[in-house]
Length: 203
Image (cartoon, rainbow, N blue to C red):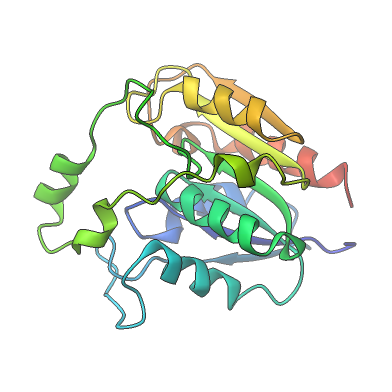
């Protein structure tokens, strides 16, 4: 993969512009695309999208070549689903502050849903539905994985990042001293540097 392809996916805000500060710091020659989530945040809904599996289908429709999926929070659940379903289409995984599709009940985490409901009262119910447990399938993934976590994130505790790092054989966890669930916004240069290192080692 001489010219890496990357697809950036946001969390429940729905707006892929979340990733622009990081993407703009990566090499200009790399192919970079940014995907919004229909129906999330202020992004208009689509009749095609009514579940996380539909979002995974939306991503797969855009993977014309092996691609690095770069995903924040809820977007990491979708990225994990895509990697499990079609691993040959995913060259790398970058997951930040996400459950990655595992069962979260064993972890002490803050509930983001009430505040989200207040901010986006018309959000569809499927956004809040549990998506099952991908743990067994994640163990079988063999693409390089970068995990980025804030050390004091209440929504996605670093314990989840450490669990995912132990679960996936090619995963590396980077912990950033922060309490911000959107740690990527705080440290775009560090996150971009980690992504570039991940991909440069395997092209």
